Image 1: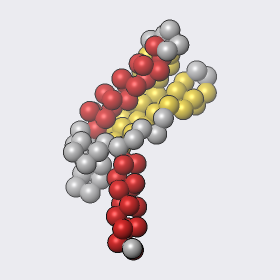
Image 2 (image 1 turned 135 degrees about the vertical axis):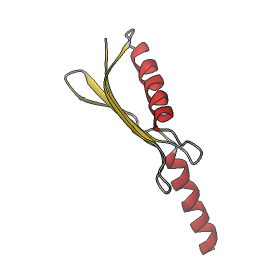
Image 3 (image 1 turned 30 degrees about the vertical axis):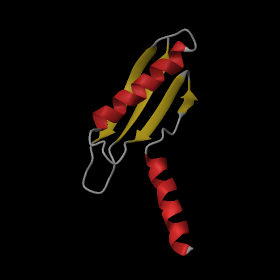
Length: 91
């Protein structure tokens, strides 16, 4: 029983590593989004590209285009997942 609970917890934790944290307004019409890559995503740039795609879709729903303001990414380093963060406006 304990093994099944542990396996379930591990599965939920792994699933959480590949899901976006969402787009969050941070003031003055600026939005931020961040995301961890999955177990096979080694490039922070790939994660950043996924975020900008999501941002583009978010802005398109408003009839606008994404305008990048700031971004950062980290590639996989042995025990860490690749990750990225972006800031943007919809104009």
